[in-house]
Length: 92
Image (cartoon, rainbow, N blue to C red):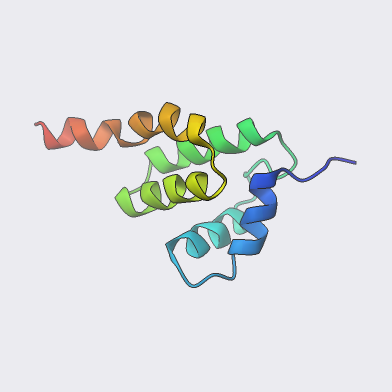
């Protein structure tokens, strides 16, 4: 049996929180494509992919979720990737 990742445990806990992070976690729980039983890096990559397709509020919620888990490496690695399209649009 697969053990839940720390990220998935936090998502399940935070889904009841009345905040932008709670809203994100509810969406993750409902997302049938989210790799619930995957590795944490698979889950992080999926969130970054989803974040790239959504607005700044979703991106900020993802970064805040990473910060709660103290995923400093993930924040540094994926922050630019998440916000790259916005910066390109701002520069146009």
